[in-house]
Length: 306
Image (tube, rainbow, N blue to C red; front, top):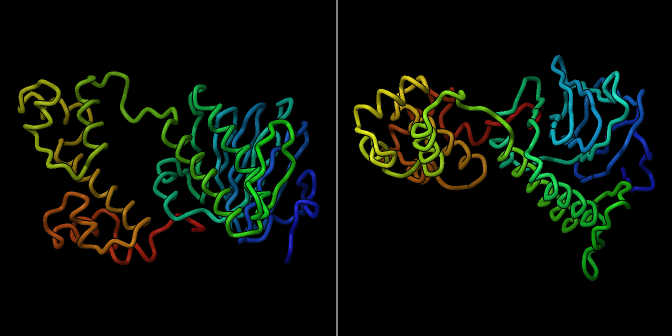
């Protein structure tokens, strides 16, 4: 089935199917009250929405969410979904993209999963909005590239709908979307630690997260935040509910999962790159954490619809 921008509706409507898989389709809408789309069988592609103004409401399976300015909401394929202007809102202005998600995005979105293949990345800081908006405009322009001369220059205010057909245009458009996913997921206003967590414990956790493969010890982490090892271990466990070494192991396992998802490194190299000295120990603790050995996780580990 061949689809062009001319063949797509200016406004999505009930019973209008989503674009077929394999394409990257991007657009921007500003819809009035009453706008709604329902897809009882879901879509073959992923749907990304980023709200710039007003309010939207999205449903995916049995889960649902509102969407306000700065919210990225992602719907996985093959699950019944619907979306529209939130009741009571004056309008909903949003960017949308239908495409096949890159495997590496799974770990970035996973913390924001709410069930049934719905991922809600809460509002990004205002300072990031300009760069996200610019990435969407660039994505729209790159999707229109024919492969001759240079890609079109982004022109804010002349959005419309674009379909990336050629391989180069699709990959360029996906690179822009990857930047958007990174920016929104990386700067989302989440509160992983309560407001009462000591700033020294926050710094220690940030050090673990930044380089989980490093040879961290209770002593080295305590020295980094100017605490004695015993005081540091007690405070860390009391405030975060797990010991520093348990937090380190969890960070290393998350890092290993990302490497398995996004690289072709051998399991042994993934273990070493994640800070595990023994591949046998790595296999055991990975299976305990994810319910499957690392090799099987690489083949089967994915989000709903991945």
